[in-house]
Image 1 (cartoon, rainbow, N blue to C red):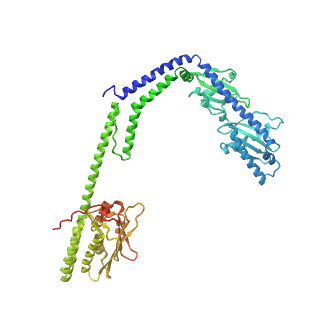
Image 2 (cartoon, helix red, strand yellow):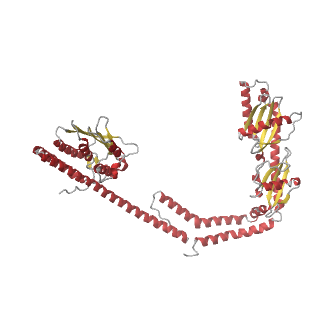
Image 3 (cartoon, helix red, strand yellow):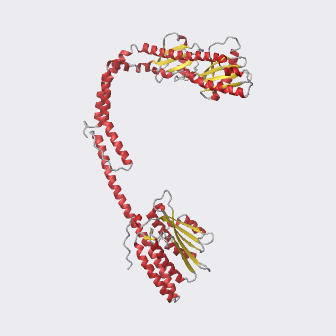
Length: 597
């Protein structure tokens, strides 16, 4: 393999040429930036924190003013004091208040819930954007304490810190009159926005804590880091603090924080100095110094990878997708890289081999199917010949010469019809004539004891089917159903054309029925036939049934089938189903007749 043309060599050389200038610029920029990064990072994060705290405090102050104004400006809340509790007007007023609260939650982005509490009736109306049951439980549990704080005449603007099961919250309650109290609840996690502190890294984060160091909000900081913050809360008045862990593997952190004016809590950000130094804002410097160079490097890298790797790989993937859809006329152009050229050449060779293999397999399947069909079709003829000779022998033994002459005539016509048995298919009319000769022969053997009826629809004679499809079942009916009978034995053959289902193609389905008034199928045998167990032993006593079933399966697949049943008024019934096809639709030219000597 040519090393210079290899994908590995080209990739390494190209990546080196692209990344080496960038690495050199990054190294120079980091060495310079380390001298000033601490001050800049602390100032940036302090500004972010101050802005975040200012926004939070402003929302809390606006919420205070909103709550104070409810008792003076909201007519629905005022009207509740004068309406009868539980009346229709009372309920309608409560619903309007609920709708107003839900609308106002959207205007105050930090507020999680607004509530109105009826102290006389102990009734709480709560509108929340969170879990209703949890928030309702928190408010109800803390209402007695909130009401005690409002027993004086002066309502303070501070918010109270409450515990809500798995979370902490700020709660503000105001007294509207002697009966009603209104309030708001803020999830403490909504006040803590760690996404804006990009320099915190994976080992830093933001947290809200109490003056004694207890965490009030969720945080990425672990327990040890929160304890480290609690030990240095007294220095929050400084712009920033550099604090260190104790023990082995101790790290240094940059800590900035601001105390809240609306509640007894502190906002704190802890920045790992190691991560802070590693993630310097050097891209600003590069953009100022080398905007054109950066654009050229980026375009060159993308063009290099596209020409070398992406285009050949995409072409190979598209070719594989076409092959997976069954398209085998796919030929890919060889790329310039020796590795991808080998892969593409192997892919093209594989597709050619699949094409030849598919054709060979298909042709072999056709040959095998044709040979199997012919073998099955020929198998049934000796079976009938033996039965015919037994009938002639029986008549001759009885010295019924006239019947032997009549039978010989019918047998000649029958054998003349049998010359067509070497064909792939014959028409239904020919098959019925063949069966008529056979039954006439049987009538001569059993005069006044055997009769038959042929009920063939006028529009089905031109359809085709495999030869000797009906005869095995007629033979079985005479052999097994005719036993131990005193009255006349009647065989009735009907053929009808039924409509095809939506999943079947063609003109419809031929339904052939062989019905007799004999003794019927034994129960055990009927169960075996209905379960298709005649197909397990093709050399056994059900060879005729197995032969017909297998020939239908080979030729038509699941579109053909057999059913067996005992009639309620006595006798047996066999039904044969196969697609209604003409010779043109069947598509096969007939095989040459078998030479019978």
